[in-house]
Length: 139
Image 1 (tube, rainbow, N blue to C red):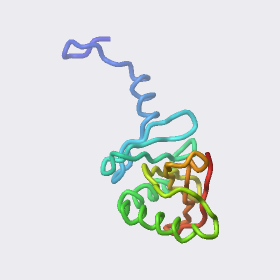
Image 2: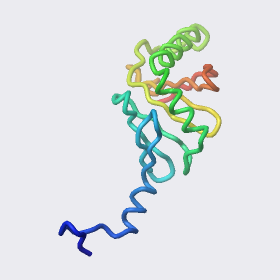
Image 3: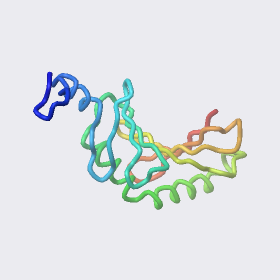
Image 4: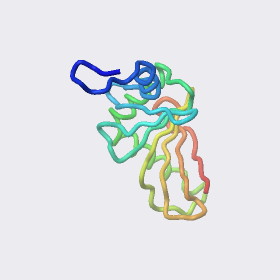
């Protein structure tokens, strides 16, 4: 098929399929479908990734992604403060919490950090609303 400008036109089914694998969320960026979840590098925070851990993105997940982007620095500081407040009772080794990413589920969301410790390579703060709920520590 040739378009008026002389270039090959994309068949409509390829255009529709392409857009089914992308979803633009205002105030966040474009989410790309990755098998059974969605992934986005936010426009305003290009050094992180937000994932939505469901096959479809709900309106509440869009709202959460917007809220996370709008309060990024405050959210990261709140998570770091919570981590430090739990240090004595959980007895973890890690001192550096870097490269934050966000995973948004159905009703909760988690901010993950990488650490310098092999035993605690993945360190997360599970959130409910804007409040830290619990630590997640793994390798």
